[in-house]
Length: 258
Ligand SMILES: C[S@@+](CC[C@H](N)C(=O)[O-])C[C@H]1O[C@@H](n2cnc3c(N)ncnc32)[C@H](O)[C@@H]1O
Image 1 (tube, rainbow, N blue to C red):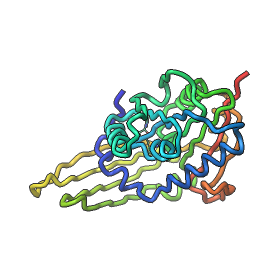
Image 2 (image 1 turned 135 degrees about the vertical axis):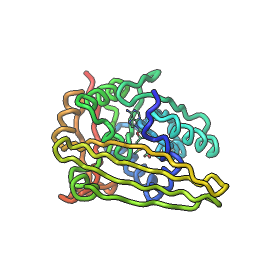
Image 3 (image 1 turned 90 degrees about the vertical axis):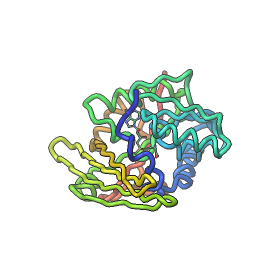
Image 4 (image 1 turned 120 degrees about the vertical axis):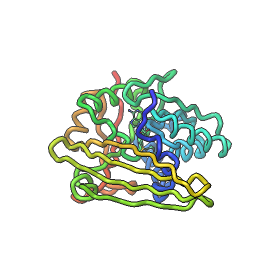
């Protein structure tokens, strides 16, 4: 599988998300380990790992890491970052988050930065959660976050954004248009990326992403149906209770196995 949605944006991705505090997020994950696990897990899976920001953050804290993603472009960047950070041991696999295969089980699975919203078809959520459950140790923890309905309705809406930045002597430019349909609860993001080639000419690439808006009831039902116990829903990595205008839910679930 080569998930095409991250073809052009991969080169920009880490700059667009430069304000995401993966250190604080990893602190939150480790505090949940202390709360819910008898001992620190050794092997973790970072599902939909993208360019490997969380994978590397956790590897630096001493965990053995596997990263799974469907995009060859994102994984290439992740592997290069891991090599440069002296973590060549991280196993990166190009697989679909709904039906990936590992060699055995892991102590916890992280799936960060609204990757779960990329599950857009009916049945995707359960398929993904069931596969995660299959590869978790008994009582292993599953961490994921989603963009909330509030964010789709009030922040994304039909907004457009422009992002540009200089990369050395090259100019990177990205136009970004959202279309949210409250009927289907699908949000299309149409991106146009212009990259300066070094001789004054620009290369144009277009790509579209689609995210699906999930309610807490839908997420909870899918977790229960696939053998998880919902442990917590937070509004931020500071363990706060989600407010009505919260833009991201941080969800922790435990894999029950008899
Ligand atoms: C918003 S990015 C998040 C990446 C990373 N978790 C982070 O924190 O930066 C979403 C990621 O999900 C991946 N993705 C989307 N759908 C997928 C699928 N069906 N299977 C595997 N990866 C998928 C994309 O390739 C992309 O890397």
